[in-house]
Length: 117
Image 1 (cartoon, rainbow, N blue to C red):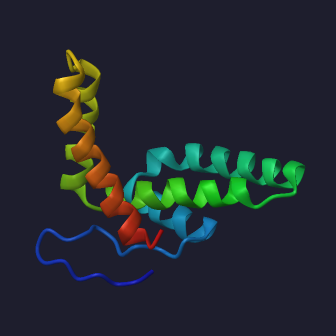
Image 2: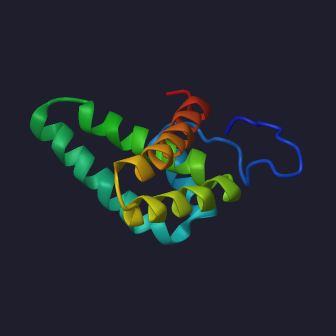
């Protein structure tokens, strides 16, 4: 895992290596209830990669879980994303949802950049 000093409200854990083992260890620390989902996704990605003879399903697995970890290792960011997702579900029209979706995209972009994706 790479260290990233962030001040008093920094990440709970460093960003892990983008491997199944690195991501699994990170999820075990920050969101242990999500481990069954990670394990299921990894199994499906491995099966699909073998069937398709392509690494694309494994790349998708790594991307998805790296973004998840990058978000969840910052509790304030994770809470804000959940608030925005709820607001998006409750938005009355397109004008109301646009700024919500823009903020969600910003969180996802930041997470991808932190993960090196």
